Length: 382
Image 1 (cartoon, rainbow, N blue to C red):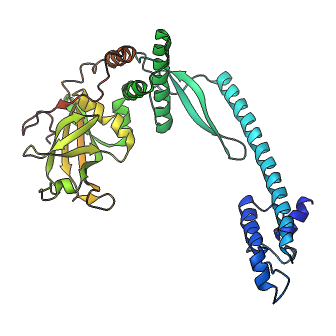
Image 2 (spheres, helix red, strand yellow; image 1 turned 135 degrees about the vertical axis):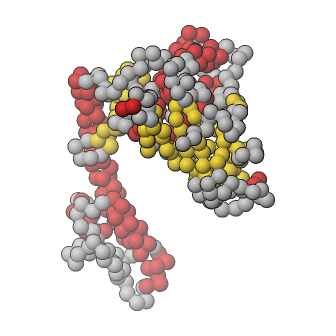
Image 3 (cartoon, rainbow, N blue to C red; image 1 turned 180 degrees about the vertical axis):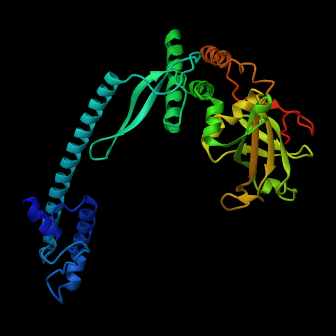
């Protein structure tokens, strides 16, 4: 049987896609089921073939009169299936070859990335790029440069996190090799999560990132010889957790101010003016977690948090979490801008030492309390 004959058996035009072939096969194989043949035998021995929407009159399936004709349908379907697999494998092989050529060409021609560097970063990282072949099919992810490059909008953020994650993996692999031991998966995952969080901070320029992701205004008058500063406005949310936990409580109203309460497990918890803790700060844009939360950990930021909407639920059921939208205004503390932030390299070395020594465990997200009162410097006044 040839491919043309196989298409005719199934009543399909040539070059029909695999999904349509599979659907047509199922329709026909049901028609030649013995039970259906017996039920129709009193009326006619022929099995009518319903024409699909894409078929024309010249592409009709050959009539099948007995259950044994299922063998012909299977033969035609298997032939077309093998042909499609062969075509697909050929395309994938060509795509793989194109990808290898691209990778070799990139390695020869560039090796550099158009972004600023942080020469004090603990370890260099890979810059990844997604590529496609000439037909627009995805080939995969390839390394186009390596160095201590800062993240920019030209680099997809998921690929940036993949790069930082791989950077942390390299450090832990070196640590295991120095001890001539096999990695401990549970301790390795804890340490890798901590390293990824710390390394990401070394490759993000906070001011540039905030200018890209938030609305900014400049305060002060440089023409009058006064210093100027920037305030960034960010959409945020207050995550309450379980609705049943807050049943009967009076929740903040639109316009109410909230205040930082405590940092736990890389989350900034918020409280109302009475000091009652409500929930934690969250963002729809995941990139902001790696930018804003570290500023609070380093005590480098002044903040004003105002409720912008009434509570809204996420999902169904009494245990479903719910949230309130917030207007978050932040400004880098002018008293802290003159000094470098806490040395992240020391924290990275500490994580590596604790990973090497089984007796000491990493404690990510150490709790940090905030003392926020009416005149506290953590509030932005305008």
